[in-house]
Length: 148
Image (cartoon, rainbow, N blue to C red; front, side, top):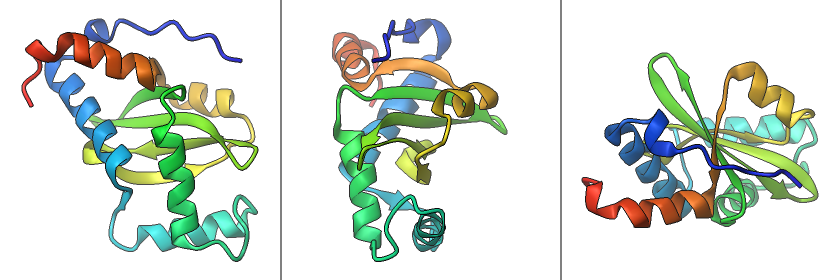
């Protein structure tokens, strides 16, 4: 079990960045959206790597992503790449630990079960934000300051 001490989100993100994080989280929890044509390319890669069965459909793959995004106990990370913030949710599906990586507006980048999740996150400079439920609770507590 990973012990989580939520970083004070207001200390690391501007109001605009916090708004973007919450918008992307709400979006991915509402509907899985891929860049045009990328859903099948990612599914085929996951099949080749035996992350999902060869008979898995895009609906099966999206369900893994959706279920992980819906679990309020899963862990949310942020990282910057080319002056853009991306987000990752860490959680379990099909008895494997997965990373769901998405960008602004909740648009999917990838979802996969890394061999070494901590190593993957550390190597790329992901910053722990906290459990989804903590982020959502913090959002509710701060709602008067947000500009949706």
